[in-house]
Structure formats: structure tokens, C-alpha cells
Image (cartoon, rainbow, N blue to C red; front, side, top):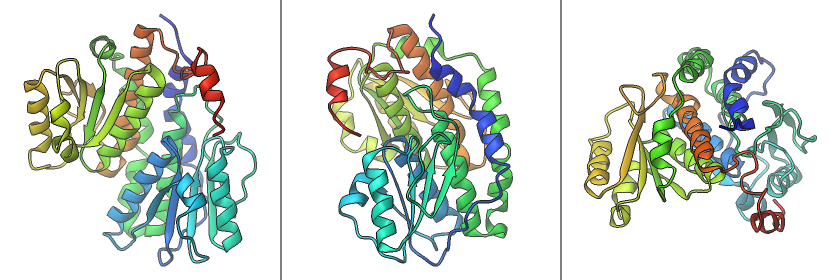
Length: 336
């Protein structure tokens, strides 16, 4: 079976996070000023997680805005009081760069978060995560960006409120190593390789993991997948549940009013092939960590699942279909 560059990137995440945890020269965000986070795709999901952290750790005193970089570059309001964080792994995409340019012209404080291989950014602060991804199905850049964002969030909240969060962050590399010690999810991949669409769902912060995993499935396996907040998955989508549907539901860390169980019951009743992901006796397992830090670990068994489905199907997660026509031409025609 082929080995992918994706496998190397997944395996390198623990070491990357461990290295980033030694950084101590990050700028400090001002909790009294508006905070805006922007990204596209995986980077946008990282921004959503950071916003969730800020709201939760500040008990709602800080309520950042999260924008797709396209919207913020062209239409969304900005002022010189804003603090703008733009996450963009390669640092070369059109609209993330335009966000920074626009924010700088207005006089806002700007922070760019990119790979260490990215070109210089038009920002007050340019923070690096990891070397440029060698697989187009991005994995290490996501968890590395989350690590930098977690440190920025902690600095904004203050030491007393954020210390348990920071202490738990130190444990993430060990948690990732534990996931990789488990066998790859080959049997689950075999059952999902010919299922389409694939539904992923989670509660609260896990809904962001569901969305990120759905993107990885599309990129790496060429199957259509969609990520939902669990409650939204119960309102309307069951009309489309049917035999042939694949599903992965993330077991919540806290009481969800029985909604995950309800969704699982519906999926079973309507003929879906469904699997669980979580920290107990789950089909796709990750260790229990601080509830707010679950995005850093819950995504990894799902990344591994993508690699195994790709091996079965013969797709190429390193190229995300750009190595075959008509995708080669069609995707090259769009400037990102």
C-alpha cells in the first residue's frame, strides 16, 4: 500500500507542537480592543477555534469576530481600533494578503500567522508555525496554527484565568503520540471508502472539528462530506439520511441533552453506516484532554482515516486531485 507525504505530516504534529510551546516572544493582544480573526478553509477553522477559546476563557467578556478572508478583504467593516489576526499557511493567497493590506492602511494592529516558508507578510507581527506542508491535504499546519493561537489567546486572557489551559496545552504532544500508537483505522476506512456523502457532527467546539474533518475527506479521498453541529444535523438533514450514507459523530465531553444519542439513533434507523469518535470506547479514539483543547487531538484519528480511505480508493491526498484531468486544468484556472 502506498505511503503518502500526508502520513509524514500527521506523524510530525507532536514534535511541531512541542517546539512551538517553547516560544515566549509572542505579541500580547489587548482585551479591551476589538479582535477579528480571518482565514480560509483549514485556516478559517483554526480561527473559529481561537474565537471559541477567547469567549470561553473570558466568560463572554471578549467576543471576537471571525471572517472568511474574502469577506474581510472586500466588504466587512474595519477600524483602526481593531486587532486583526490573519491565518494563512502559505502566506501567498490573494485575500488573506489583501486583508492585511487593508487593515494596515486603516491603522489596525495586524498579526499574520503562516508557515516558516511563507514570504514576508504586510503585518505588524509575523508569527511562524511549521515548515510548509508537503501534502496538499493540510494537517500539521492546522494543529501548529492552533498552538500559536492558543498562546495568543492565553496572553490576552491573563495568566490566572488561562493557566490551567496553558498547563493542559503542554500535554498535547503526549496525547498525539498516544493516538499514533493505536492501529490505523483500516477497517473503518474499508466501510466508508464507498459511502457518499459522509456526515460528520459534533457539539460545541467539536462541530469545528467535524467541519475540518469533512474538508480533509473531500481533499484526500474525493468523496463529498459535510460537517454539522449536532443539533443542526437533527433539524432537516434526516430527510436525506438513507442507506449508503456514511457518518461519524463525535462523543461530547459534556452533557448535550442527549442529542448525540438521538442523532445516532436516527442514523441507524435510516440505514447509515455510522461510527463514533471520542475518548471512551469509541471507534475512532483520542485521549481525554482539557475540553477546550479537543480540536488539537480529535482531528488526528480523522486525519488518519482520510489516509487509509485514500489508500483503499487509490486517491492522492498529497495532490488533492490536481494530478488528474479535468481537475488539473479546472483547478489551475482559479487563482487562490
